[in-house]
Amino acid sequence: MGIIKVENIRVYAHHGCLKEETAIGSDYRVDVLVNADLSKSTASDNLADTADYVHINQIVKDEMKVPSKLLEHVAQRIIDRVLVDIMLIDEVEVRVSKMNPPIGGDVEMVTIILSEKRS
Image (tube, rainbow, N blue to C red; front, side):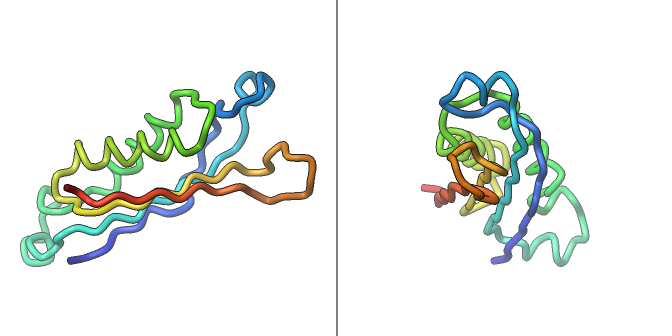
């Protein structure tokens, strides 16, 4: 087993429960950690034998384009796509962070963390 982390994917998106949030948009950070059997790729040195982090990054960018009220919903969509698109992955953890959330205080970010194992 091995771990691939794609960290600090920066995206501007339109998520939130308030009309202003979805109209104006804001900055988000997404981190993805996947567990996969990397033994074949360590021997072959072939991109087709690994969990391609370029593909993971593209999944995040695609799913972040779809507006949602809740970060939990966005994170679950990313997890679902990763597990459907990349069969080599056994487990995925996704962290979606809203930077400078409008919660009436000086808060750097709010983060939702979800994980799922392939069944």
